[in-house]
Length: 377
Image (cartoon, rainbow, N blue to C red; front, top):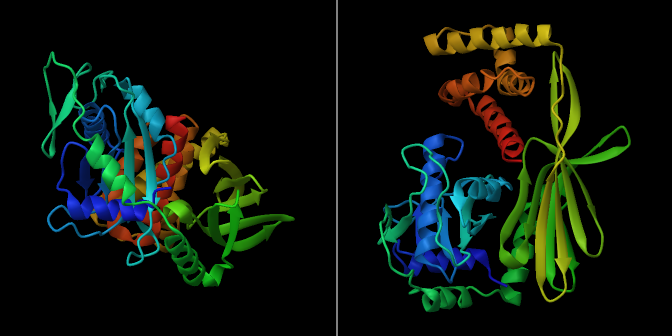
């Protein structure tokens, strides 16, 4: 079992960016340009390492290798994006790795790329890259190539050595459990051992609504690998488990005019097998709530008026400030009810919401997260 925190440290300590490893301050696959660049790097790393894993470490300063962290990223549908845009797509996973010195809401992203042994290429046009383009790593750069030679494997022994030096042990596991239990003391931290091997820790603020138990501020870590599996500050989740599995159902609160309801968003099932293996399955449960179109037109126009005020630097009224907090969610609801231009307005609002305050910007990011999950499903 590989300790992913150790793996990241080994990659940063012993390697400059090369043909099997890249590092990024951050990525943004919500925009077409960011999505295209991410796909280019996946394509290049897969082609440059046909028989071993490649890695992208996200949340690291390029100049001094300082670990600065990024927001928790729970896009479980990232493989769908890879499959949609790449031929012979590699198996790609994105894992959130906590580091003790980072704030609770920051992690380091670890993208692991496992190629299928065939040439990977762009399936269709995206941004300024054309369908059919093939990329390889040239030092620390992902470059388009024209070639008629066999893909060579030159990194297997190096990658194998790095992974071997990142193997977990009982000391790292116990340290991870104690760290989690101490850090989450305010939220009733718990742990469970699955299959006499896997140690899973979780904590959350308990809330009972109509005889149903939900948890908010939920944090779940698979300690053996130092991977944060789930983290939520806003939404409520339900948690159930048995001897072989651990299930999280995530809910979102959506509504209009102070009338809100819980809607199941996604189910995450972690199944633990024998011989020290596990796998995570996710299933989208969300069905968009439908609202009266006249009411939505009124809210949509009100949102647009608030956005215009933000653009012009005009002070909002108290009532408009309250509506601003709901603006990302109501734009999302409008979009889900076939107001197609609402998503453009939401993207247009991003810099103004970010500048206005932390709370409304967190609501914006949460709405995008829901949209991303729905879209890639």
